[in-house]
Image (cartoon, rainbow over all chains, first blue to last red; front, side, top):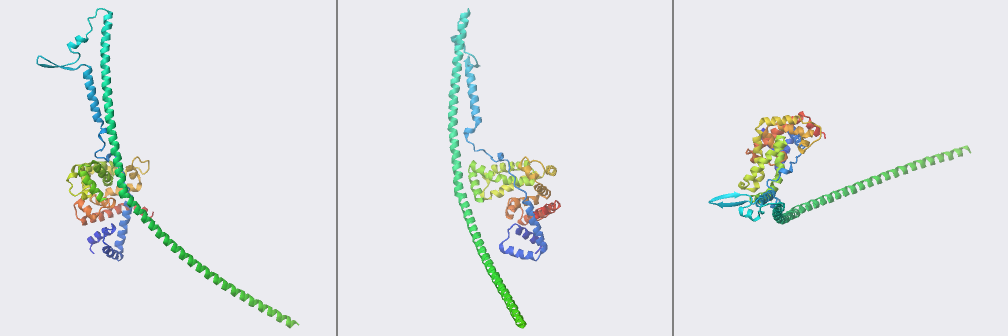
Length: 263
Length: 189
């Protein structure tokens, strides 16, 4: 095996990309080449060191490329509408008008001459007339303010209604997305989890069976060893008793013989 | 995973923004980690991600085979890494920053936590010291679990070249880590 082929195969072996027969051949080759085996072990250690570098979690704020938020949350649109309404209200409040006089277009503020004449108080000559003129102007301003208030209230109610409708639509969309996610989970994840649980149960059953078999085998061995030991003890005891009995008999015979000699 | 990617790519190509966001959400952390380990710098990683996903977003309609999305994405990211990597001085500055990181003290972000961890810090520093072509192969093989064939397609080189780079890269890393006595520690744990 040349150097280049050895490197290629070593990398394939290290990352489990060899076919079964290639793997067997390479392992046989490794068994005859302790230097290569040592190099491979060293690389495995380096890989183990690399695995100590954890993943980092990026900031979630940069995840979304385009926000799928519904239009109801588009504040710019509302801001533009409010500014436009305020501008129109201000124009109306200050009597903005466009007049065409002698072929010219004139943009003007304030009351038109005719209107001024219509609401212009009579020429003031004394205090009573000043008061009347002031009251007339005040009434006119109050009427205009009420109109503006009423316009704003109507506009505000319309906006609120539109916003509620859009919020309801957004909520509905969210619920629909949630339901889709739930359904996807039920369809994809639940069977997988069930399979894993079933697999775990079968593994546990197998482990239990092996454990019980080992326990039974151990218990039987222990029992047989105990019986053998008890048998051996009994045998020793019997021999001991027999020996002692013989010794006692011998002593007795000796004693009896001794007394006979004495007579 | 590839099947889900293909479906999401097809949906995104037909204008489904939700599918596009989901696709990006799935792949953003992978690209981020690749770039983070490539440069050892969170800002650089975020920049690479931004460029990569912006490019992917613009050119998604041109992807003819949705099944090749993963390779396409990594090829784009690695190309941006190459571009950024040419700024050698920036790399040197990061290296200096990395070496000056204190070993103790409170971490304020996940990146700092990683860099603060002594072991991770040494590995990151070692990764920065090996040649870029070896580093990128190690990153794609070790952390992204890509096949040799896939890496070869991404880098537009032969499979044998990929294996050679990995071989030399692992050996170079081993020498660097042995100098730091990291391998001994790991071995005796």
